Amino acid sequence: FNEDRVVLHDILSMTKDVVIPRKDATAANTYIVNLDLPPMERWNNVLEHFDPTDITAVVHALMDKFFPSKLLIPILEKIGADLDHYISQPFADELRGISKNFGINLGDIVLGNLVYDISAFHSGLSKACTSIVTSDKMGRLIHGRNLDYVIGKHLKPLTIQVDYQKNGKTLFMATTYVGYIGVITGSRNGAFSVSGDQRNTGQLWENLLSALEGSWPTFMLQRMVLERAKDYGEAVTLLSNTPTIAPVYFIVGGIRPGEGAIIVKDQRNLRNVTLMDHRWYILETNYDPWNTPPKSDDRRDAGIAAMNKVGRENMNSAELYKVLSVPPVFNANTTYTTIMSAADPDVYHTMIRYDAPSN
Ligand SMILES: CCCCCCCCCCCCCCCC(=O)NCCO
Image (spheres, rainbow, N blue to C red):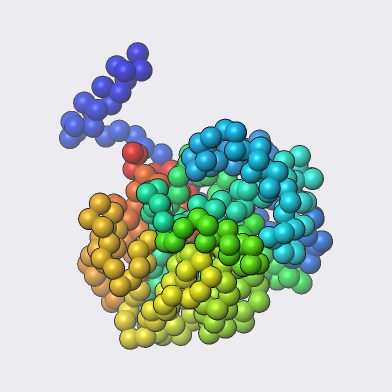
């Protein structure tokens, strides 16, 4: 019966008049995280709306993907539970709080939060993600990103916006998956926006050495910078000069014309910074700006073509969303699209891409 269904689906797809119904993209809900609360309590307000077993399922699915040997999982969980060696405060206690208050294995929650740092190195694993900082006709900067990742079917229902507050006021906005306390996408009002794209270079042992030397878990650094940096310049300096466990591309947008940067990082050191300057947009996927992307995964040229087709005169949040919806920039692994502008908090918007093309 299942085989028949697959065949029928294929035939219908080939018939031009028949439209296969697809799910629609859905706006992500926003939850407040109060940074004035003790770290152990900060995430209660979020986690109480979700089923903790969904978070454990995500971690196990990720481990299955990256470390297929089941024997490794309890060992990795044990290493993860020893978190004070590689995670500083308040992050260590936030993770303890999530574990204790919601009955999630501490090793699991730690591993889930370090999955980027133990999987971003030179490997044949699939990659995808696109970040764009662009100016519109008026010179206002808008920052858009697609977060593409494996196991999207588990991650989409856990996609949320977080309003990080201090003294009852928003300090910065972020988009994340429930249980993931680092920031991969975020914007600090009146200051800067930032997104991280995966960079697969170097070897796993370099990540491990970097962790032993006390480097930052990559996306906890992004969150720290959103909490501490007062403006675009300070953000670029901190993101460029702080050692991370894994290599990464940090894409930063500011609030003034020309304030855009692609920061290329090795495990410990800064590799290169490309500034926006007089260009009207910058675009990064998962390849070094000075290299040609592989033919098998050229989201860069597809994105550039889509941006140029819109043109600076017509660029706005809706058009940027459309650019991020052009295949293969938009692909089977796209979990969410966020559009943000540090100059205007009302722009911040995340759509969960239930409408992504299937594999
Ligand atoms: C306990 C937490 C559960 C959720 C874990 C989710 C982990 C998500 C890690 C995402 C890392 C994103 C990297 C940047 C996006 C990108 O470039 N993707 C291409 C690689 O596939």
